[in-house]
View (spheres, one colour):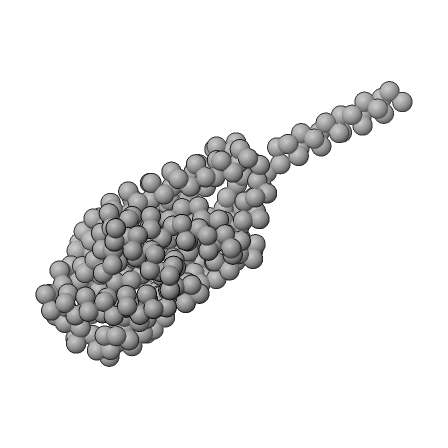
Amino acid sequence: MKRRLFSLTALALTVAAGSAFAQTKWDLPAAYPATNFHTQNLTEFANDIDKATGGKLKITVHANASLFKAPEIKRAVQGGQAQLGEILLPNFQNEWQVFGTDGLPFVATSYAESKKLYAAQKPVLEKKLAEQGIVLLYAVAWPPQGIYTKKPISSVADLKGIKWRAYSPATARIAELIGAQPVTVQAAEFSQALATGVVESTMTSGATGVDSKLFEHLKYYYDTQAWLPKNAVIANKAAFDALDAPTKAAVMKAAADAETRGWTASEKVNETTLATLKANGMQVLPPSPQLKADLQKVGETMLKEWLEKAGPEGKMVIDGFKK
């Protein structure tokens, strides 16, 4: 009897110990290659959490849209199919206009301005995501956006009829306003679309230019510094709330560190990727005065349209940014 009691006690202790050190596993789908600076930052974020929790929370980063495609990631997190995810905020502008704030051309055109815009956007962004069962962990800007083409351009008129890769409502609207043909292509499919002639120009960052080896198909990059769209790392609220207090604190600390590290990396990447484009034979040029003026008009039109759709929340964000 004593022996049986001892065995049951030992079993109970073993079960208790197992539950005390139970490991939680989360998936983090991302849309960009493992070599992209955003994805590398995600990997460091996951490693930091692993170390801080002593292996209690393990996060697997699924790069290059291998788990979910870019447009599917937000819904996957919302529905609990993935506990975490990285999304490009302007992709979801049609769902809620304020998601597209940083996709507006020529509103915030530098890292300092982009941070200021994020500060104005963040409170309403957090509130909206919370209503959708999502926690905003951190956000990091892409480098400034420029125009890639096969042929030289000096004005918007030179882009008329060109097959233009769009990746968000804003980039599709730019195509419409300049008379180009918008074609929706996600990052993971970009190289193939260029190789097969589906697209022949785009407006994106130097980082994407290097990731997708745009220099193999396109010859000119006009450094318009039009906007700095942000990637946001989000968590399913129910999954986050189920964590114990020390683990939650570890996640938020790692997120704050990742945000700081990510913005620094973005600025560095902006410098290095433009150099890489040049080294691979691409001409990196400033926009002509005419092209700059034409694009500025496009930006003014889009801001006006956006404010009409975004309502009081949008006005509050832009007013906060302009203060």
